Image 1 (cartoon, one colour):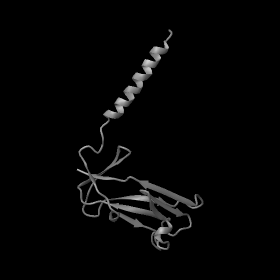
Image 2: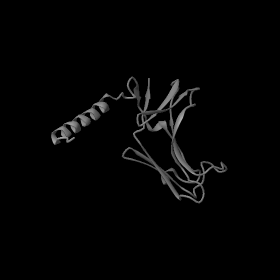
Image 3: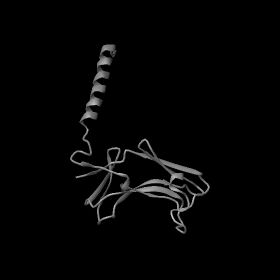
Image 4: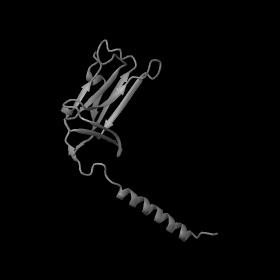
Length: 146
């Protein structure tokens, strides 16, 4: 059976239109929620005990960049952990925390009181004898409440 170019073109246009229609009809996971304004006070930075913060953290053009080297020290002297550079995004008593990543629900947890829930973003050193340098970048982090 031979398909004409005209029918093929019509089929492609219908497929493209259908794909766009599906994209526009998708429910926004933030519908019904209010954006919580964040300030620098919400970002509690944690670093190695022996390295100045600016040596392992930068915030430029809305991007938080954190990095560690395999030979860096841990968060505190005798922790026994690998080096890490991170920030704890502090939340408030909201009752329940639901985490969405790229529009997909990943986690739900009930709040147990003030300071109970926070979101860690950061970089952690790789196991011994692997990568010498680890880096992570974070942009556009948002908190919504209902």
